[in-house]
Image (cartoon, one colour):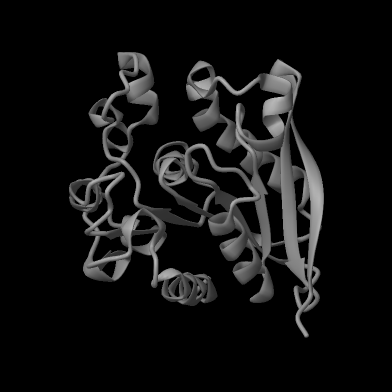
Length: 240
């Protein structure tokens, strides 16, 4: 039986005196050194959400270490910051690079060949395709149903400065390495982030069909396709 261990960790953001609350998953068949996957939750979700736990458990059962963490104003971290997420929009995005640094520095005894991958949905996908995309230390990025431009969010008006911080459209470039590094997915019936966001991200990155998975149905939570996405992601990781 493949049992999973979940270890609670604190990721310090020293300049703001905040500890991002996190969990590291690993299975009893996870070797001492293995790839590290950072699993980024969706908006207003945390590391205990069903979607996050499904993939954290799935990757760890396959022999990876998985780190997932609560953003500022989310989950257990909100006990320190409060729950006003709008106040922390820039940091919710930029904290990712501090989390990546923490993995390299604090988990190097478990990190195989410096393989760090990012996986996330919705705002997690956007965080990956902005601050994750610009971080050359990250080997593989899996961005699910990410928004292309945060100026298009219904009923929410972000400042122009925050739109540029949050929107993948300001970060992504069409370079050949994208098709070795980036994988995106979206369902055509997603009623939260319209499918046109996927098309724009795919085109701006110049991704081929193998790196851009389209599903006719499944909605914002990829109903009926979660196992398929997990299997696909594991095949990609095995190439490293």
